[in-house]
Length: 159
Image 1 (cartoon, rainbow, N blue to C red):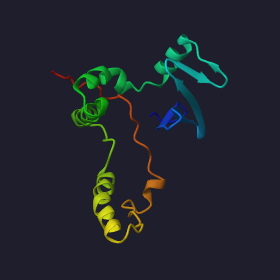
Image 2 (image 1 turned 30 degrees about the vertical axis):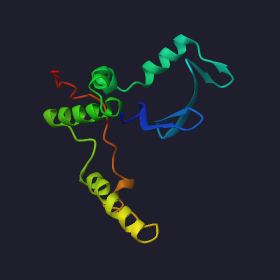
Image 3 (image 1 turned 60 degrees about the vertical axis):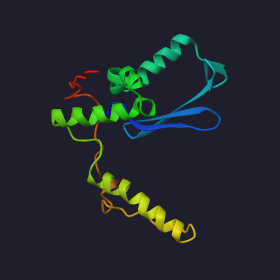
């Protein structure tokens, strides 16, 4: 994620039953979607398959910095395909470098309320229940935290 007129990835990567990956990006407020249909080792964009070089360029363009830095190590260590390691590494790196964290107390409150709300719903014949807005509506205007390695990315790993 970067702010300003640069590319801002919303973090939306969705895979559905048809094996279509949607990568959304926002540039100066404009939403662009890139739909990639995966067919084995081939990828189509529209009515023809991408060439290997075009696919490599696409992967390079959309691979986040954190994956470039610790992705292979994360896969080796494991935990949800390496994502647990990457999230832990990112948290430690932010703390060591004085960077804002990717989550805040409002995220923690939201994540923590899901189980009791689910229990209430089940106990009440699966009725729906509203999830509280712990931010008091401020989520609408909060500035996104840039998820780059700028100012960080210095945490070493000993395996």
